Amino acid sequence: MKIKLKCIMLIDDNADDNFYHERVIKKCNAADKVIAMQDASVALEFLKSVKNSSVDHPDLIFLDINMPGMNGWEFLEEYRKLPKELQSQVIVIMLTTSDNPDDKAKALDLNIAADFKAKPLSKEMLEEIVNSHF
Image 1 (spheres, rainbow, N blue to C red):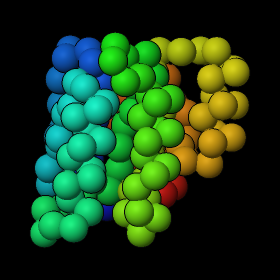
Image 2 (image 1 turned 90 degrees about the vertical axis):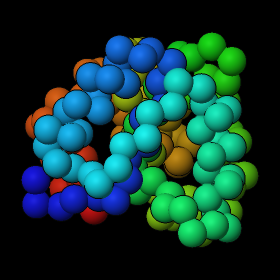
Image 3 (image 1 turned 120 degrees about the vertical axis):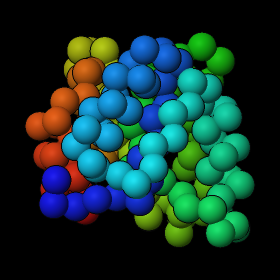
Image 4 (image 1 turned 180 degrees about the vertical axis):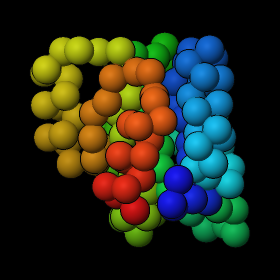
């Protein structure tokens, strides 16, 4: 991969999916660091904590929709409240099993998610995303 990001965050309640996607990212050498979160509310708190600290924020977030507790839509509603400076430095990609065209339209209409992709993450998909957004 030509471009290596500092940090990619995975937000998905499915540990197996996070494990697989982390392996794809590492195998492609796409990021120095991968943060896998199984709880969207914990991921949101992490993002709130890095906004004023020296801890690196993720360059790219892969976000699932269907999660217990805070789902992907609720995460995006709260994410929208984070400082615009932070949001402008992070690309959010919906990565989900949903093939509902309404979900894709909703994700893109919110103007937060840059793209909507179907699981699983592949090397080709990752390269396309990185090359398109970085």
